[in-house]
Length: 371
Ligand SMILES: [Ca+2]
Ligand SMILES: [Ca+2]
Ligand SMILES: [Ca+2]
Image 1: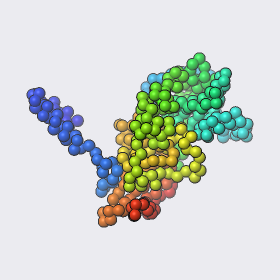
Image 2: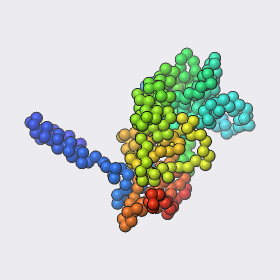
Image 3: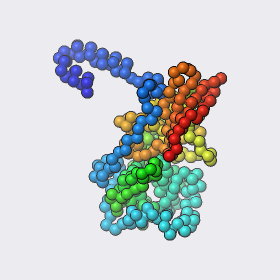
């Protein structure tokens, strides 16, 4: 980097060096981005960064980057990926109701937040695997109490079989059969990804101790908190006196102001509004640096990730968890209370003109695209 070379070439004297450190520090401060930079679009900026397609990992890359707590074992006999992934699409579909009967208790206890499979009863404890928009979970019901533990295995790389031939909990380990996969983008159908197995017949083995570890005892396992950037050592990551488990916006303090209200107004709506307070594992994840966006006070749980890949968690870097987005704000050059902002979902982009009148936002849709 630039500073590095300046130091190496010209520094011989400690005092000068100190002075230079001061200069660099001052320069750095003046470079630090302001709320203005983080939330408002300057001329020539794009509303959304263009999507850059990443090259899928090879089997070796997945293994090299796998979490330390995971062991991957090759199986001699295994269920084929194709057979398993088509399970609910072939003739078995007729037995769907029958199969789902065993999962009624999980659906009830977890308020329908997971797609469940691989059920197992171990004495008085009931286990199931669960999948939601964030990834794979181990679900447990003990003494009528539900708990869920995030596996931290991205579905960009890991596929867990719907049908497990062996008990999933054995000798203090979670052991599940599956494959290493890569995502195939379906041309012309954004958001409709398909998977292809690049390494079949794997046993994914995780020590239950590592998996259920919840250092701050706030209800979310450490793996979940680390995967999404919450603080695994604090019950209250953002210090707003609401524990992570009950906080609808656990990463940032909510604050009511003009622009946080604009972002709040643009949050995606849900057609059905279940009791989101009870849905501790259902999150919408947004990519944004904007302080005002961070300050929203949502009806359902949300998480934020940095727009800069270098500042994202390893999990977010490889997993597509962004299903909605809201852009930065563009000011109108002539009217100071008029702004422009866009939001996107899996199949649309809507552009709005927003006007702040008598303490309220009025939004008008001025364009957009549907795909
Ligand atoms: Ca925790
Ligand atoms: Ca925490
Ligand atoms: Ca909090």
